[in-house]
Length: 395
Image 1 (cartoon, helix red, strand yellow):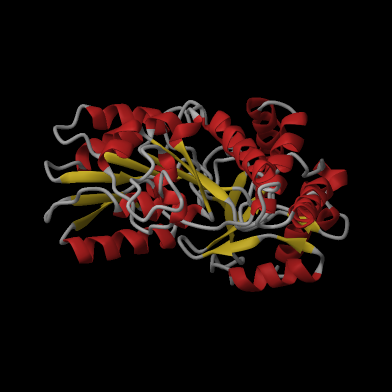
Image 2 (cartoon, rainbow, N blue to C red):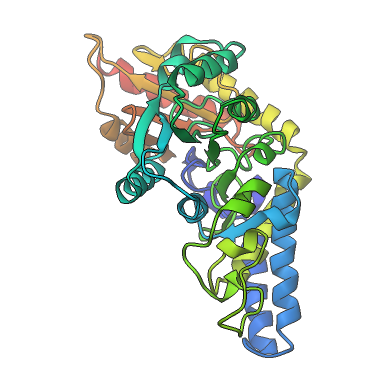
């Protein structure tokens, strides 16, 4: 797959968690899709079968990865819409509590706080970041469940927790959390931000247990930006109402009095870019050709372990996790000889001038490198050598 990604030919790239490179076959599939639509006519009876074919193709592929039937999968533009549209359609009551993990992305957190403001809800925090740095991967699920039990209240109505944490790189026990919530008197809904998990780790054993499992195709799946999906639970489909409403939400497009779809399509709004579906479906097929999700995870985890182990020998480097990451996210900090944290933005700029691309995060202030199946050992060693050289200059 690496040979299909022109973006990897001229740089050493570790930012798959921000956006993955688009393979040439996926770009070609998008161009071919646009061409087919124009040749058949963008709004003719001849074009609709092709549009339906490509939409169904990507919906079924994403649903299969999530381990859910396709009627539970809505196509979205990004993770944010996948989280927010179903979330805001749930039946809230004043005083309901939203319990949000302290490693969640600011976009989701902001949406929850605005929902709380409008609906008279309260917001509480579930601490998991500290657990990631002090607990082994084997013991982390039990520690997360213990923290969850301690923070649940009779008013808890929603828990927000990412599957693969975007900052520390730890994996959360989504299925176990869902099971734990089932025993709660109010059976709180579970919203999972899957931005970093889809395409990076197997999700079919976790996604079916969440009420909202939202992801994008442009990160670890190496698809085009602008297309993602959300897997929804059966009870959410029964309880939630559409929020943004358009013709795709309706059973019959041309009837203003038509009822909404009873399945996940009620959270789709209006016209979307069909060639994106062709591109994402092609990227998913390219990934599948490289191995099953567990096989690909094994490759990525091996690369992460190589980087993590190497960082232990870089002067002043401190990894956020106490042991090699379970997936492809490796987060760390750098300190000078006096123990003063280095300016992470300056580190990113310095590496960028060498053609090596990682990113900095705000919460916590750290550096993050992403290891994909396309990442080579030579690239990992190049990053380690560059970091060691930067640190040695301080001595």
